[in-house]
Length: 237
Ligand SMILES: C[S@@+](CC[C@H](N)C(=O)[O-])C[C@H]1O[C@@H](n2cnc3c(N)ncnc32)[C@H](O)[C@@H]1O
Image (cartoon, rainbow, N blue to C red; front, side, top):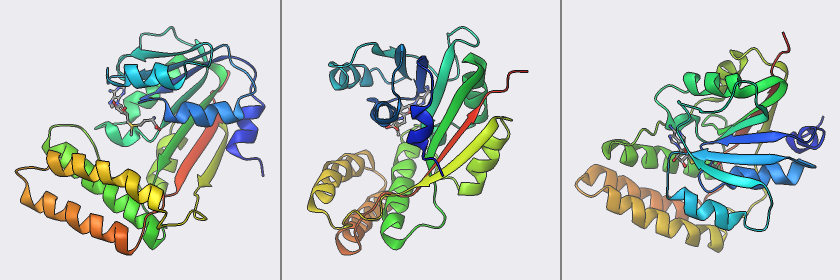
């Protein structure tokens, strides 16, 4: 069975839009698969990402960042060959309008890619990621930032199926060979704990939850939760 990168490898050279790109983490994944592109645009509301993004792609031509809202895409209809959204559907109170906007700017016959981690069927070490994610979402929520918990796989499948894409392919990507107690990963999590514990100030229950999770990371370990990757084609009719 072909992998998502095999599918990306078969795509013709074209324009790519990565919605809610952050500092462009998912574009690195795309670049491992795409043989060529004419332009890649990463779009995000977060202006801070506008600094990290160009730094990350300074050696790559025709990859640029745009500040913009996924719910108000200012691009022409049918103007992209590949549209993507990675680990961001849970950042919208209602993700469906985002998917509809993406569909509008995708040309008929172009590819639609959704990547999103999910919460069911995970190992104990992957559940650390899910629990952490739910804690981050709870802390963001009390700070007025839209951040939902993690979806179940079937919810994601239904959401994407609702787009009526052709040749829809689903993949479950996980890296469970990674050492769950890899000191580098645990060290990377420390500043994230510090940042979120600070953001949770004034919410003792959330602060206590953060400390419990820090302990869980040390005792049980951490592995990334499985991500569903859905790729399909916009119909030509
Ligand atoms: C978890 S990050 C995902 C980053 C990236 N896609 C990745 O996979 O590494 C979620 C991103 O969604 C962005 N975001 C939230 N609401 C948005 C909106 N209405 N329009 C565009 N981006 C938005 C946030 O600023 C944040 O950078």
